[in-house]
Length: 558
Image 1 (cartoon, rainbow, N blue to C red):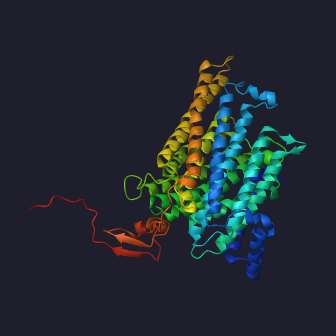
Image 2: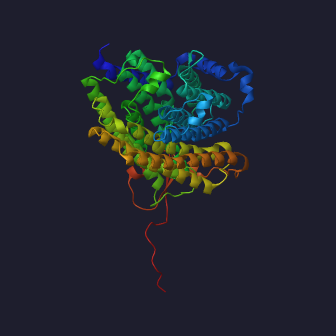
Image 3: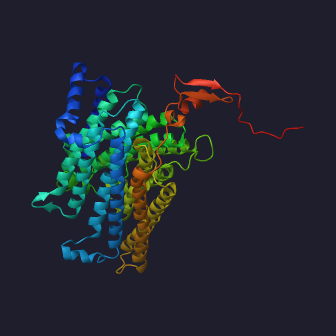
């Protein structure tokens, strides 16, 4: 294996796997279609025996279960991250746990916070929203609600083992994180089968947001297979690439799919441009997403690989940097589509009180600046310069708590009332949760990054002693981040209480039904075909001339 071909060869296999999966989904397995469907349904339900009877098969039950689990993990992840930030300036704050044999460290708690945030909070919220949005977009029902509900317990168990493995690498001679990854792979396989069976029963043309969701599930497995097939799993570049390919498919495509669906349904506006959605999908799978850590240790731990330095060849640096820079185009397309759809035809969000709209708006605004910052940090690390390594952890935490968490929480809050049939307990508490969570994460991580820049300046000047302002900044940053913990608690209690005491959801509105592909278009004045198509119209959309005018009224002369 030639080191200079690591990125090119791995991406070639990755693209071929995605193309093959698309062909199989469109053309099927010829005469084996019915056999494959029957066998898959048997594996999802009856093969599990009595276990499948312990969960509800009611429509929307799977989505509800996944979303509630995800919100609970969001609270856990915020708590671990807060404690990790606090121990960064006060290493003995939790010394009382040493009497139980537990010696918490800042790096271990931050690692636990990243694992539980990515796979517990964001992962489960994205899956939960996808299990509701995908059938709606395809005009069908989820293939197996019971199996999807049961798999949520397996996924939660794997995330729990990830937390244990982040604090204690081995228990009784067993390495914990690879076991957690094995359980996660089993759960992902069941979800992929469920998703493919759902898509196969589509009663209408599958829209692009649905394809984003489908490739979020398939792309994650394809990334793992591509890296292992190319033999790059034992090289630092291959491990780094696997981390970012998985981030660009499961996390970015999944968040894009459910966010575009939720922002359209929640605001009541059709998607501004379906062409931008297609461009987001295409760009996400052919580029390398820069958001994430520069350290591929998470991949090393989950797959029990040998750790290697990120020593990229000149060709790998050129190809990797170019593809990461190219990823800015689909990221900007996704963000612009979100923001203009929220704005609609007015100068403000049409329904600002709709659940999750504020979170979706925040995630769309923060996506571009954090992606650009991540691009500089990743190219610096890939090229071996390592001048920006000091802020890589803060940029990674910002990507999680200011982009991915808001988008996933916003989508979940928008989907949950429709899936469960009940609203949240209190809209006022939901607004407080948003301000606490977003304000705490933004201010806390921004001040922490200021401390990182201070450390970098002191290191560059070779100062013998650190500045006192540095520890003060870290202290203020960790205190501010505590707001994210309070906000997560508000979201959890508000959502769980709403499942028992929340207002019963009414029938779906006309705007919700026609948010992705509108059925009629009111023509109030001269317009262009481009504007009509960009508003979500199809060839079957009925264009109705209206006598109403958009011109401002004037006083009537008597």
